[in-house]
Length: 418
Image (tube, helix red, strand yellow):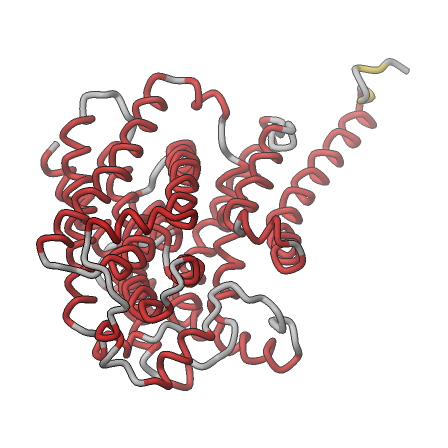
């Protein structure tokens, strides 16, 4: 009997080859579904991994799958694998959006002071203005899908990875482009966050007015402040308790209902399963649901939503082609993301000084917009100023709520500009 590598020829060899291909796809599916549980375990048990962050760990698993050769399936199985990946991506983000938004305390919007709202608006204006300038500067640099990339970055820098993933789906961004933008942003943002945590806020205090600023939280009731201080956006402990599991099942059903309504509205409008209509509808319904106490107080919905985001992140990263890192367009993209991060801070700082925003309030607000609410408590602790904690989280929550809308709006404007 002859051999070809490790596979036998003939009917027996074909059967073995087919069996191995099927087993490979099952293994890939298992890694997609089980990978987040490993990430959650490492995140909860070891400080090193908690400092890295769950999304970065998800990308690491996906990239290992890609670089290891596991994803190089034979041509006859590629369609099956591609369909599985598409289904997972198309379902994970729409289900995650309501789960992550249900627990948000949007009622805090109405209890904030003028300065908090001022720095929020200034931050959003600075980010959108900077990205518009970046588009005009780099539109001839050969960066693929530039208007889509800029739209995603608006979502990223006003609401974090949730809106970034949503806009990837809405704008139908190429997988490699998505991972490149995420990789460059993560690498650069790490140093920016490290700068603030290691004392960069002291420089901000010299540029902007600095005081203990008791008035910042003056209109927020004490019980609300205590409640938000206890809020941990990625505390997975107790998530798998029996009582919590049943409550999370209820939240999942609400989330699926939002998805069903979004799909139904899209079909009624004659647009088919249009991702723009579906995701914007889901986001709107989820925000509305967060005002209902019965839904908002279901425990661990944010963490449950993060599970689906981690699944999505592993799938996306596993599809990455490393060859795209070494192109001229990739270098231009790196320069553009660097420009946006630095210039948006400078512009926000200028507007904050113009409106006399307090230094620590500026810091937590910009961190909330660029990194999302989970990063606000560590920065507030580093500054030893808990009074700005609530304001920073409020800014981040509003970013969660409006980031997808702003990203779609910006992408449409830039596409129109050409």
